[in-house]
Length: 379
Ligand code: B12
Ligand code: SF4
Ligand code: SF4
Image 1 (cartoon, rainbow, N blue to C red):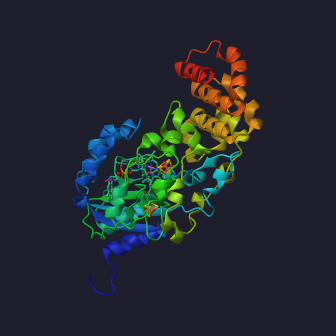
Image 2 (spheres, rainbow, N blue to C red):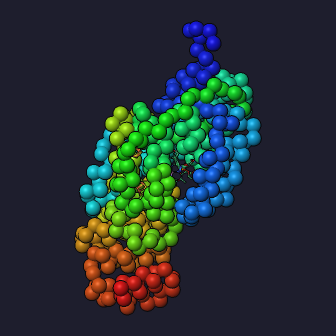
Image 3 (cartoon, rainbow, N blue to C red):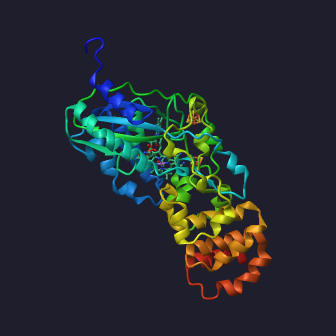
């Protein structure tokens, strides 16, 4: 490269930074080592993917970027800061309100990130000299975190997410695969040192070891991805977290360099800033859709979401929520009725449960709901 003339990589970086990305890095696809396929296999063999069967189904393609796209030569990895301008853990001290994780308090990041990436992609394609490239955000079978670490965006912290020296733990990742050969950036070093704050704070003890997550215990999985009743043993530790969890990210000391998100679409909207549980317990399907239009929260659907709100209500210790909770004993969705039984028992105790049982249990056929009644009536 001649002195003073920006390299191809510099120009691509400039285009992506101008488009709004806070971090941009380059990796050679060939450098993505077999270690990651091995770790993915270990994760799946241990059952740590819970009911996310798509992770196992796609394992072969997920193991290496070239298995996803054989022509891929280089990866351009981008990071978008979604740092909060509030203390994300403060809402945990307000048991009457629901804690919605930071990433879900704004517009769906899939839409935002993909939109910006797609807009910038044609310019990037011209600069790479290869017309064909592929853009990925989250949903493709690609191991984005190890790829981002290889591209020097940050390192995988003990909580398994990518940590950046400049942005801390609050960044979304996106990837462009291209057939062009681009000069790679040096991979990031692990800077966790002797810290284990993220492991120690986890409310449900979801890390069987550092750098390993058992999704079956992770509140993010349980409240977003898991479809049926949530493991009874884990319900108390969920507290008032009704969509996702930020604890392990929020305590990371590297966040001290983080700044609040610049992208306006990633800042919290009023509908999802610590909403009162009482408002959420009464949401029917149309009201749920209206309230969470454009937000990632809509992904769970109303039934799973109200199940989460019932667990938070049961943990709230607030008997004022009881009328709304008891009304849900007759909800059409079994997952809601079952969670309502648990919540009534927590808020009103065994005498009230016994009083309600004969009417509410009559005609019940769902085995999970019957199981909830059985457990509360004969603990
Ligand atoms: C499945 C998934 C989940 C699952 C499982 C999470 C997990 N850790 O695997 C659940 C639903 C629990 C989840 C939760 C969250 N997720 Co998620 N999720 C994904 C997804 C789709 C795939 C991840 C995956 O491949 N997992 C399989 C495991 C095997 O891969 P891995 O975690 O990278 O595993 C590595 C480690 O185990 C490590 N390892 C094992 N042993 C050792 C030893 C050493 C020494 C080292 C260094 C590493 C190491 O090596 C493996 C790879 O080599 C990605 C998007 C994508 N396509 O990559 C988003 C993604 C990881 N999620 C994301 C986010 C934001 C979250 C949440 C913060 C959301 C929230 N607030 O609730 C939480 C965080 C929970 C946590 N602590 O991980 C972001 C993370 C961004 C970042 N900075 O890293 C991603 C990248 C989406 C995106 N495009 O931005 N998620
Ligand atoms: S997201 Fe919450 S539950 Fe999941 S590993 Fe992190 S602290 Fe634990
Ligand atoms: S909290 Fe500590 S151990 Fe966890 S990712 Fe951050 S620096 Fe690493």
